[in-house]
Image (tube, rainbow, N blue to C red; front, side, top):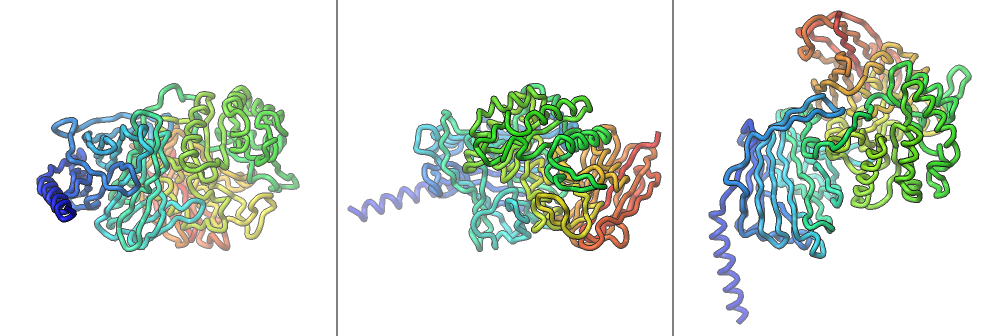
Length: 636
């Protein structure tokens, strides 16, 4: 009997394999035909896909789908396309409240498939000129014990990769085959000198686990960790799995693919004020000409006056203003300096400067969160910096989305710190979600934050979305400072610090020093004050991961700002100014001096002004660990 049963099973498997050998392959191409996404069921009835770029396979046949058990086979007898052919030439126009540019146009081709299986899936794919995105749904997530995602990326070659690494220096460069265990997105991957990829996710659902990647040493496969999904809805809609494609690292930085995969904003967000913001946390204990700064009303007035003078948007008040942030008795609306906070908000309004208020998760969960946010709105606060959120990744995702929605309801911008959920293009749906600390903030990480850390993070972490890195610290002498918190010296240069504020994409460029240290460097302060958002345009002009980056942004007034930053190696770069409009431009170039060095001589620089046009080139020079900035204003 056993032999007959085995023979019957073998016959069935053989019949299935014969049937599947003729399985149809469905292919969707990008509008420019350079990227191809193919989908089929393989000889074992697995749902598999592959991705090719310029005719070369980059991701070989890889499994995708939901199963009832982790790593269980997803048996799919057939694919049922919703339309006979892929929908082609779909065009989107997006005009963000703030972002890398004021107008975004995208085209893509797409196809949707019904995938009969134990979890009754639907598979949607979009192919853009700068990448591929696919997402899956399941109608069985709510009426089962849960489902698990079994998606993998079988890369054809042993490519070099870099990964987000929490509040540490990024992992990489690392060969795919050398990775073992957990790797966190963004995974930025170099295929060749003219082909780069970035693996991430977009439009993370409320009940979705933030994506983690798993690697097995000796292979070139990255798998999505199979977290248990239990949705209260009739159908679970997964996040988009996204593979961005570019011919240089700059293309990944400039892409809008993640945002475009999120829904448009619903409602009026004209009250969102992106730009440069001062911060009171690092000024505490700073001394200038006998005056000692603190986190108090008198120092706040000085900071607001400076912000108004320079046209900066806001002042961020950090922890402990309502009492010790980790104590449950610290009331976030009544404690400690609440009256002074209301006074400085009123003073800021008179000066045209907004005030952000820190809120720790202890107070955010032990006091009614909506009542707290409603109170902040009543006071006239501009935003909330939310810190130290607790919970597993799913709980943090839900809590983050709840708080973002409530902040929008109460006209508050929001910045998440301390191991936040990664960005996933959410600022298109919620423009008030202006930034988050998806990096090692520079002033918290001087023990690990080196010049190479910055020029790696901007090609990895920042690809996910806006990040709050707290660049722009200007007390750069050797040795410790008088600051109360984390008072070690910063391994950088004056020019590099200001260059980094422009390069780092964020709706809140939070700078951490006292007014006097910015006034000490007038040419650099002029550049910083010209960083007026929303940006009309952004272009990453050049760069190599872990080596250097050159960024150009056009401010709200039409001026162009260019910033370059390097790793521990000094370098000079010729910058083509063909992005300029017609006519003559005054160009003020401020850069490291010949004797500048990020370890020994951080404060020296030179500055000069010349007249240029769109046919000009300017040489920007950076000392080891240094930077260079170029301010271009139209000649009237």
